[in-house]
Length: 352
Length: 255
Ligand code: SF4
Image 1 (cartoon, rainbow over the protein chains, first blue to last red):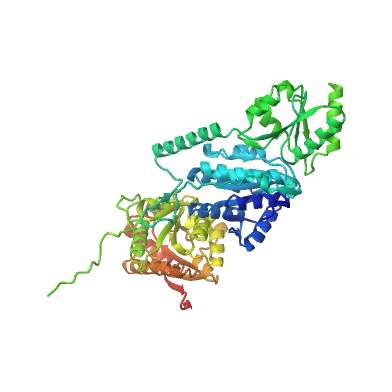
Image 2 (image 1 turned 135 degrees about the horizontal axis):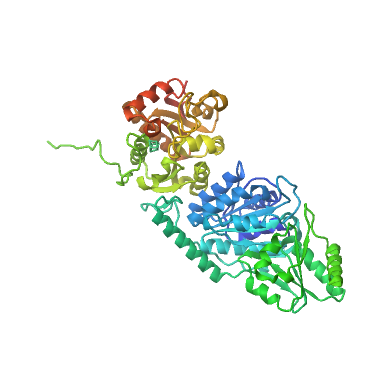
């Protein structure tokens, strides 16, 4: 198989899923999700051992994924912003039944039907929504086709290792962004399955239920899940990309905003304004240690985000309030423009 | 002379000995036993996987001795369909859901699985109300029937006239088998076991969507002793939810 491929973000996820041993995909045609589904259908027809199924609605697809996973499949699914409530409902059940799932959430502008252009305004809904019933789901935030591919493998590794659902948060721009992806640079190691299968061996009765009417049984179940979360947070400390070190100016962004922030940072460096970029590639777990380290020499912090301050509130617990004053928000479906970022940073520096 | 003994009755192998939580006189108990007997009567070895919905049927995993999945409300069919995608001919998949769940929030999935002819055997327990939630209006509640949400009796406006969902399913080519029995009369209970068994046998060769409805009683929410409840439901459902065999793969629609 060719090592370097020109791929969109959505396609890179599909390709990486195939290489991570994914055997089934469930989806419903919505913007961006369709690019992923169509890519996988082409690969299915090439005989690459994955089956794609288009469900009658997103919710049915998510729970077909649930059934198939119970019977041993390794499943990828994807939804769009509008269907996040359905996805969260499914995540709660995958959490309770301790089943692996990788769920891509392609985000667009909202609320309501909004438009199909990118925004990052569903992040808190996912971060907090996944905690319904004290559940949890890792939230990975790639920004380019290459990081999409790497994050997809990571997502399957976590999902299968800890038997839990993992969210891959991908904004509409990142899904459509095209680049040459060097797949040989990502190590797709075998991910072992460690779970019981419904409908498998003869003779033994296996049961999967998330209903525990007895209070003590439910309390035990919660304790198991709490222990799992503790183990997860001990082993997985979050990932990030850091560019530039020891600068007084630090830009923080993820997703497509990080792509633009990187370009703005490069332009500022060319203007003799040394600055660094911190890009979290997972928001749960948040790479707290790396972030606090990168804050050490920082005097000016610039948060770049396509939402009404959601990234800012994610960073707030780790940053002194006095530092958290500059926030660039781009709303309604437009990506922050490099020139705007550059001008904004130069102006605020001048006035401070 | 050698005496040949044949067992004609006994405790079904597929039924667990755990005490069941159903109210006295409830048809759920009958249905669970029929499922167990039908599975025992299969004449070919096959793994059976059961999927149950929410409500009074949700504790089925405790009562049946084969692999079981308890699905979220409204989603037993998608879960079963996913299982079927993965297990294919390796297993027979039997779904047991109440009508409040299956014909209410689960209806979209039910219709689409039927259209696709998914090889599932679905048994719907229709007891005219949402039992476990406390006796609320369900999609099959009869006109004038008192429920927790229609204390004065179900009015035609705004809730509509009672609809036979099997008739709706019969319009779908993907449905290969459809039948209804009344789970409270001796003769029909025996037929019920036949129907469930045939529904399962069809899946030996993955021959499409098999649907059986068990019309039952929920004495608790009807607030009637079981014999009274039987009388009431028998009369009130006459002509609305007829029992019988409506479709088979061999004959097609039975007039
Ligand atoms: S509430 Fe009704 S349906 Fe539920 S177990 Fe009791 S009698 Fe049966």
